[in-house]
Amino acid sequence: MTLKSSRWQRGVALLSLLGAATAVGVAVPATASASPAGGSATGEYALNSEYVALGDSFAAGPLILPQVELDPCLQSGADYAHLVAQALAVKIFHDMTCSGATTEDMTSPQAADLPWDPAAPPQFDGLTPNTTLVTLTIGANDAGLVGLATGCLNLLPPPLGTSCEATDTAGGVDKGEEAVDAAIPKVAATLDAIHQRSPHARILVTSYGNYIPPAGCYPLQPIWPQDGVYLQGLIDRIGSETAALATTRPYVTYVDFIGPGAGHTACDPGTNWVTGFVPVDGLAPLHPTAQGEAAFAQLVLAALHASDALGKN
Figure 1 (cartoon, one colour):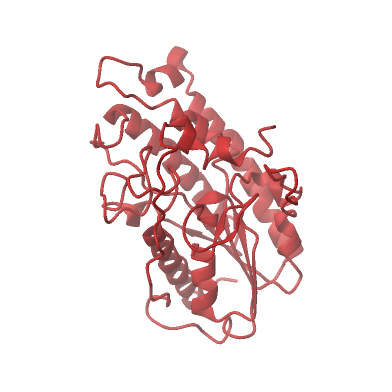
Figure 2 (figure 1 turned 60 degrees about the vertical axis):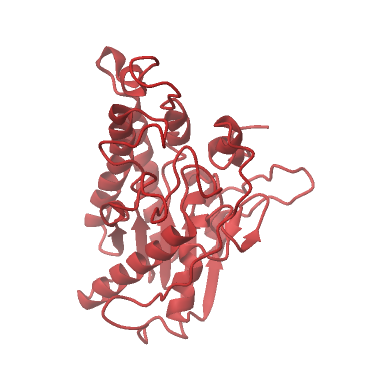
């Protein structure tokens, strides 16, 4: 099995890598009111729009019920895209999100893990010249953040282990930052290619989540505080560099999930928007919860409403 087809290795399969394969509980999506802040769906989007959702497992919502697509994408009917489409009452909706996706999967089929299941089509197949709205969450798999995060696990408290920050920054070279910086041009090319295929579309590109607060919560989440700061810093770096891409593209709006996610980290059971290395709610490690996807939908809708008010095209 190649890395190209191994969603379990790049994301959901952290259940086995982290020794959490026995987790069987799956959260039921929370009911959420998904209306833009300050108003309801506008005529620009309601009833006459064509919305395409693109991205990886953070957008697809693996293991969140209801799962509307299993192999290869593990896509939830309660991911933020489905909630946004419902709130806007869009006329045409294509959720192309797929767990394990990289920017390459925008234009190439994404192979299934099971040989008898069909591959997922290239995500750009959902785009047309008539598409009016696109959401995108991408870049973490291009940067190999799942592998970096796995290297940060420590079952023993300091100093009885190895710091991933110390390892990844040894010799004055930050391997994590280099990986993130190498992925950002691919995200930029993806945004430009979306605009080329769908020139009238509003594009909303999102960050990833707020996973670990600076003080951490060892041993609830088995990562040392310094390593949690390092890992979250890499996630923040993807966010800030993606935000910078949006500032130079008038058709792109950046949606931040990190700032609003404070107090909803993996160290905040019951209110967490994302899971940690040990998903106490039985979901996929390092992925959104149903509550998180509902919150992300609200943030996307608020950003869309705000960009409408500013007249951003």
